[in-house]
Figure 1 (cartoon, rainbow, N blue to C red):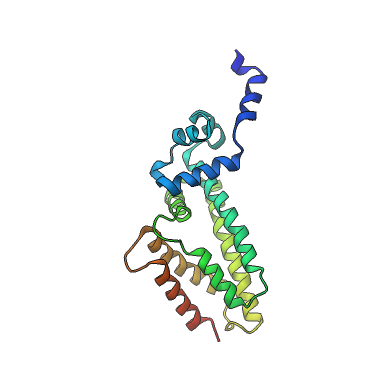
Figure 2 (figure 1 turned 60 degrees about the vertical axis):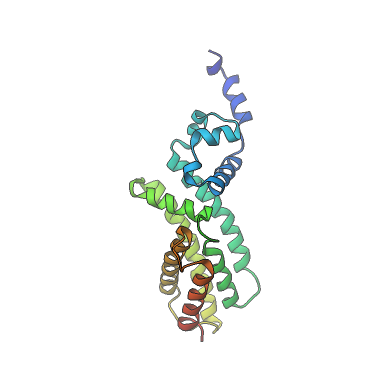
Length: 205
């Protein structure tokens, strides 16, 4: 009977780690041991919670992964916003955008998580797919705004910002997957060089 008393849930809630701590722990586990190392039971032991209590917060592992990706994207979004709001030529800020976009190397934890979430999205409901689309939309809107600014200032050729952003992000996604899974000949430096050449040939005056 004590577990159903008013005091019981309050004590558990007070002792539960903040949501951000849970998501940071999940991301750290992915970075250290990969996705196979992330389990509800293991994460619960790491933060001092039962796997059942974690399921109360996240319901499924799919939800845990998506919330962890959203948390990671929030941090990247803040970094991206700071880079793009600098007083610098549009070309320099575009280079910073690309540098932030491309994975650090094979098994980059953010890209490992991104790939897993999108792989699982085949069976996701409308809400989860909408949240995934929101992640992609934030990157796209920022790039479109930067391209439009560069065009208006005469730094870039008069391209359609939305269409060019779609093509550039498709290029970045394809190369980034190769970097994240470690395909030979497509390391981070090679990818940045390829993208730089594409930008120079198709966008710069």
